[in-house]
Length: 467
Image 1 (cartoon, helix red, strand yellow):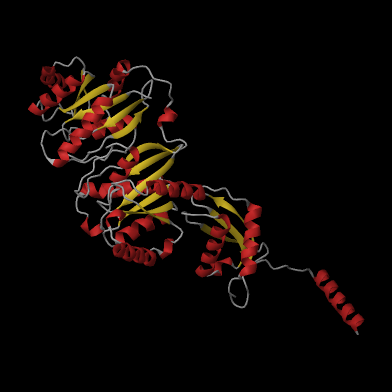
Image 2: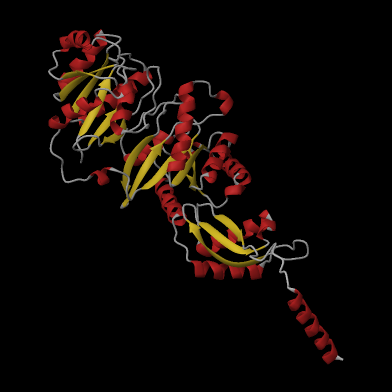
C-alpha cells in the first residue's frame, strides 16, 4: 500500500484545488462556495521522487447539522487512515477560532501535521507566516494552489515524513485489470447506498436529501475473485431544474464518468414511475457504446400489484434496450446484489468479446440466406464479407454493394442475428457498412483510329460467320 496524505481544513480554503494540482487531474469539483466536497476523494501524487495517495476531504465547519455531521465523519475516517496530515488554511481570511478547533483535533490523532497557508498570492508572505506561527506547528509553508506556486516545496516537505512503502506498486493502486462500473441515476435512487452495501462499510455519505453526492467518487472493490472500480456519480435531474453552477458541473462529470466506464448500471427507483430522465441516461450510455445493466432498486418495498405494474411499464418503455439485463435489488438490505454483479460481469465479457473475421463472414452468409435486404431500384444489396472493427462495444464492419440503401429494419435484423449467434448480453452492437467503389468509374477509354478500325473489322467478321 502507498502512504496516505490527507488534506484537512475549513470549507472553501482550497483543498480540492490543491488536490487537483498534486494529482495533476481535474477529478475534484472546484467552486467558489463552501461545502462542495463531501465524500473522501482519493488520488495518487506522482510529482515527487516517490508516489503517495492524496485524500481530499470536506470542510470541517463545526456546525451540528445533518450534512455537516456526515461530512465530518468522513473527514475523521481520512485522518485515521492518513500517515501525514496537511492542514490547509486561508491566508486571506486570516487565523480564525475554527482553525484552532480543527488543529486540536488533528493533534489528538498523533499524526505528523504540516500547515499549508493557501492563497498567499499578492500578500506579504512574512507577515502571513508570522500570523499563523501562533499555531505552534513546526512545519509551515506558504503556497498558492490556484497558481501552482509552492506545491513543489510542499511535496518535498511531505516525502521525508512518509513511511517506507510496503510491497506494492503504483499499478496495483490504480485500476489496471479491474472492471470500471459507473452507477448512474436520478437523485435519491440509492447509488451511494448500493456502493456502501457492496463494500460493507459507510464509504460514501448517504442522506435522504437529494443531491448529496456531487463529485464522482471512484472506489475499488474485489468480489468473488474479480476486481472492480465502482464510480459513484451525482444524480441527474431534468435540465430545466438545474440552476446551481455546482450541479451543472456535477452533471458534466457524471457524463464523463459514463464515457470512462466499461459498464453502466442505471438505477431506477421502483416506487416511482420510469421518468424521461432515466431514458435520457440510458440514451447517453448507448451513445457512448457502453455495456448496460438496469437495476430496479427498492423492490422489496412493493406489493405484488405494484411489482406487476412496474414490470409492465419497464417492458413497454425499455423495449429499445431489451438486450440489457434487468435486476431487481434492494441496496439497503442487500438482496439481488449477487445477481447484479453477475450481470455486470456478463455484460463486460460480451462488450470485450473477441470476434474472428472468418466466423463473422459465415454468420453474415447465414443471415443473408435467411432474409435478404429489400430491393433498391430493382437491385438487391449484396453483402460480401465481414470483419471485426473493435470492441466495447463490439463493432462489425460489413463490406458489399449498395449498402448505403440498406434499411434500418434490416440493420436491426443483422444486430439481433449476431447477438443471438455470439450470445452477446448487455452490450450494444455497432454495424458499419462499407461499399467498394468501382476503380474505373468516371473513366472513358479513348481508342485510336487504328484500334477503332480493327474493332470494326472484328465485328464485321463475327457477323459474317454467324450468317
